[in-house]
Length: 365
Image (cartoon, rainbow, N blue to C red; front, side, top):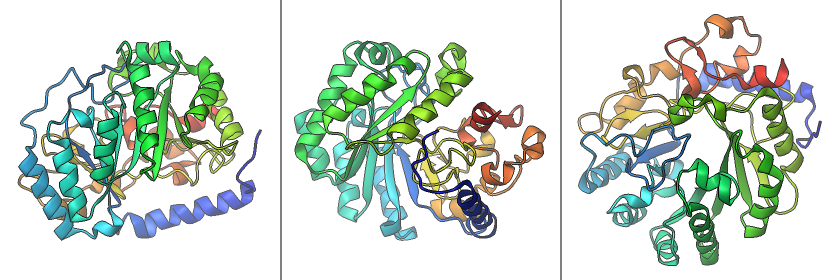
């Protein structure tokens, strides 16, 4: 098995114990908001088979207006040290918000650092220049396979070509700190990993983030998209092999705890679900939550920005993310719990009170 971290299992265990201690003694009692997600629209011009928020099937309930978003930016700046905070803009497809560039120009004028996720299909040369003018720092573009599999998965004929053109337009500006491709790997594109690597490397993109499909949103309704145990192992081994090759870094997403042998071999640091300890979000209707991929249930909604202070919610809410309430059932019996803490919140099954997917078990048992 490829080892690229240069760290022994003993050193990694030591680091993981130190991280666990930091989470328990420092981070949970004194969380620090580092990433604030804005869901600026639920509109999307694609209909992806895995969409966690089921964009296109649901309509926003009383969405925030441009003036309200600007007011939120004003309050966030007054309540937090924005030099230590990053705005993460998402949707839907953010560029479908009619006032998108006006909003982000305002954020830029206030001194915010911001990045976004996008399907890339609307990033014309003109749009790329506007993103530069409004101060965008980083962007992650979704490319979920080669042309045929991408278009099928995203249920949008012709989207692959538009997306690749969008990436080329971004790179042409030479203005952004980070242009990344993100790929969701599922049964329909797993066999294309090697070819995707060669194709993406030629685009000039220097970062490829590879993640497995998750049992959330629409994907939960289509279990045939899920990888099997052998494919999960193959995916992680692929990333281990290519992580530092040539000019394009390949990394695994932050999603899951993998076990000591794989931690630090596929991404820069050890697993930690940031929800509610480093990350918060404001939804399109003003609701305040943690990670936007978490199922939107009453127990993980902590007020609404129209009537509640984000600072107060951050300091006094989010308790569910800062306790060991998930130390139950199979997780309570698991020797890895101290490092995993129930794994990612966005795949936690709140009804069954167990992980919706356990990558550690998939890879190690």
